[in-house]
Image (cartoon, rainbow, N blue to C red):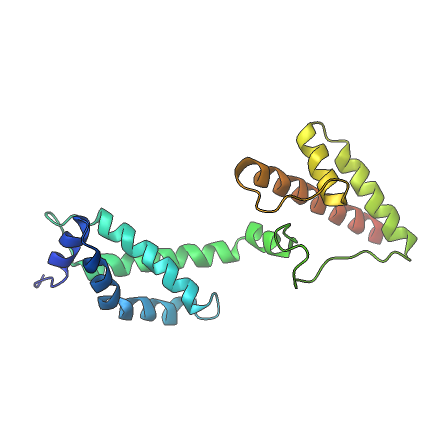
Length: 190
């Protein structure tokens, strides 16, 4: 193993020197670009990958053992980037992520994103929608009742939900979509 020219800079960054972070960011931009070109083109925009790579860099700096290292920092960082790229590809390909993408999030409601609509002239679709809402409303608990009321417009939808409230509404939305898909599939079979 040859001399690692980034080792003193990593040590300075671990000690909190701001300019060391800037230097490491500039010194490793080629690695970031190479991993993007080799593994992630078409999966996400480059500027999103850059932000992910900065997070990986911060973690690599924090975790790199300067005293007992077995590889250069650039090699360590490159492997960290490859691991992150693999994680992003797995996430993109997972069934749950594909399902989540298809869901209409409450944060984009009212934006330029296309809204899912039911044909108000088709009584079969209206019946299926009402039946699904009733079935969903039968689930026990105030959380589901509140979520159903927000999805149907009976209660106002809060902007900027966080934590537990956001998760609860996502669960209600998930169950609603699953029930609606089941009802539509059963309707097609009949």
